[in-house]
Length: 269
Image 1 (spheres, rainbow, N blue to C red):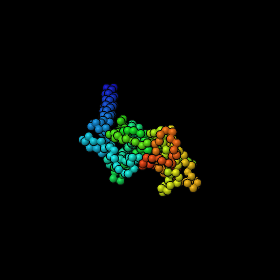
Image 2 (cartoon, rainbow, N blue to C red):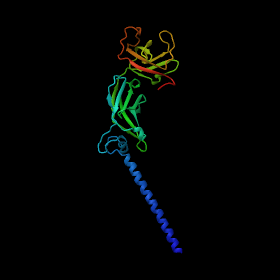
Image 3 (cartoon, helix red, strand yellow):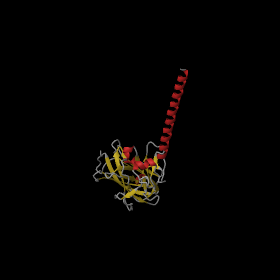
Image 4 (cartoon, rainbow, N blue to C red):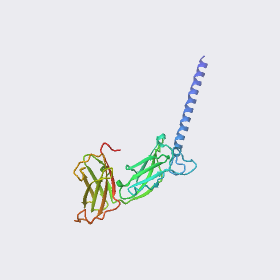
């Protein structure tokens, strides 16, 4: 009886050892598969998992996270691009975002079109003067390499002014702030309602390279507007430092004007 009991105990131990070995092998295989999913086999910036999500042919070294320019008539202040990706990324818990010089571009929007592709818009009014390296990022879950990027696209921003995004939100007054590429300039701001009716024109001058201009929401008739949205055209005319001429006379303004849109705080969409 003692022999039988010892034999049964040894057999039980062997079974436990075999189960442990099988579990270890399964774990190693799983790790190997996950590591393989993290690999960029073709050197195109896409992992194997990202290729599956994007519907890319695993034998083709292509990267569909490219920015293809689309002309809309809003250039150069709003640049638009099509992305030739036709899979529903949201269903895979993935998301696209636009990056500018290595940072997330907050003043951009991405939407899926009815034809299945994606449309990217980037507002350059809030971007610094100079070159920008734009790149699409695909946020991919369940990977150690969670950020997958497309190729870079270089864009030159030549706007004379870089506006503060905070200018687009207002309460009892609108306050516009912008950094100029010249120290001295005259400027004119035309405020409109959303039906494009001119409400007020404000003239100004700066020798500090910065526009700081407020509007108390009063129209030309002295009535305070309670609109939830406004729009404005900002004209800029560089001048010699210390120029004494009136901003409203002899000004050679840049064209087209810089367009801004404003939303009442708490009602932004």
